[in-house]
Amino acid sequence: MKFENLAEQVNKMFMTVAERAYEIFEGNGRAFGHDVEDWFKAEMELLHPVHVEITQSGEELEVKAEVPGFNEKEIEVSVEPRRLTITGKRENNRKEKKGQTVYQESCSDQILRIVALPSAVDADKVTATLKNGTLQMTMPKAATGKTIEIKPKAA
Image 1 (tube, rainbow, N blue to C red):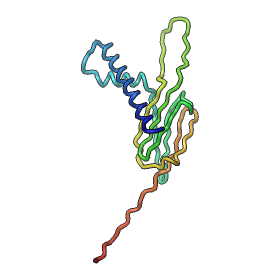
Image 2 (cartoon, rainbow, N blue to C red; image 1 turned 90 degrees about the vertical axis):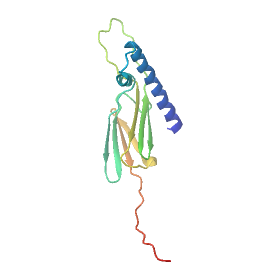
Image 3 (tube, rainbow, N blue to C red; image 1 turned 30 degrees about the vertical axis):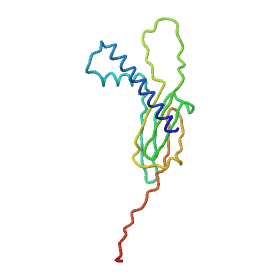
Image 4 (tube, one colour; image 1 turned 30 degrees about the horizontal axis):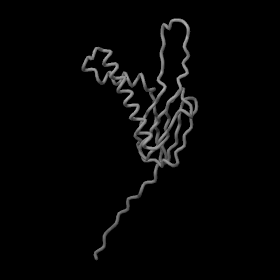
């Protein structure tokens, strides 16, 4: 994913969350002092949480991200040397049911997760697989330069 597309997508999501947070503020009678609560409530309504686990070995990082209900066509992964971005949007296939709904829970159809990586990685060599709602990535660490001690000689 190109930076312009990512920045545009993040900005669009930010504006959507901001609009929803304002709707919550309005719905609560414009009661001040609950800005953060309103913002988090809006995020919970609009964004599906992505739980991430990162393990590190000598040569690589292993990343597991939970993305249940999303398929490989609905997820985009962007890797920079020190940052991982996972975005996704799935189609809403909810059907109207006859009768009165007594109770319903729903999960958001969008994800956005940006993770700072603990080590620089070689983005060109990252591999990713999606299986049973888990996105697994192997990220080889970037080669680091060696520190060499140089002793100056008199001219």
